[in-house]
Length: 352
Image 1 (cartoon, rainbow, N blue to C red):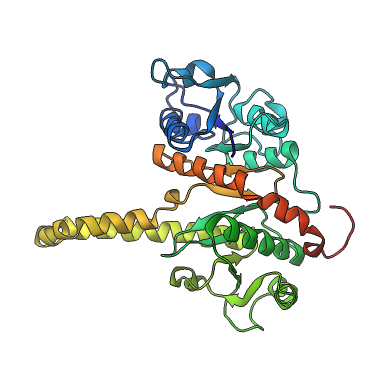
Image 2: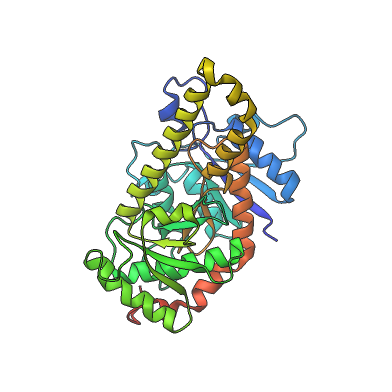
């Protein structure tokens, strides 16, 4: 059982006026909503929560008499900070402190709603990658009407090699098997067509590597996959480079928001209001099903200990889901699974 989850709370400072800048590292609703979600996790999941951040600002949102550990960290990483140096320059930031705690064994996982770039860089430099993994990847699980579809990578690595994508396929497959209960996750290579000859040089060079892994029974590679297949529940792990993956992810997010906004506008028209009231529950269920926050945060696969990036706009329920994800991640044995299979995930045997 994962007993200690270190939470990065670069929390709201009330006297600041630029809420978006001030909360950028801790999320738009920090620390109040994060504290609420964390306390719910403490009660329902039975885990010890270690809050990391400006002590008085975190404590201000704790109910009287709450038994909670707060590790004081005074500095705040902002969106203006260079992600590659933020944690090194601001060693007393909550992000840097929490990651060092994780490295030193003072926690089982870190959950943060802060800057994605700073968190990934900090995790790579402080906690380190699994030995032999070339690059860590951002791997959100997208709702698809089933167990979800992991998109790996969604932005950490704009330029990739075939070996990176091969490792992403393995890591994504292990994750979906262990955390989502899919016995043989269907691994697809994101492409502009399903035919084997489609795609650019990266896709052409990666395809045979995934085919070989499939022939050896190591992964369940189903070939090239178009983005439209995500919501048809035809693929469980969608492998791509971070540049293409990020464009896909942002496009999907924008499309879903537009669709829900359009439905809301449609049913607020006088002639449609009765119909809107009749299906209000169904619209709410659809919105909840399409909400990526319901799944939890984004796992940083390839890091030697569990690090979860919660969405910047996370409210209490979303942060609770991210903590629950971190607990399952920590208990799953996925890092050991990746470590034990590292030899077949590398194209050469020189150390990364």
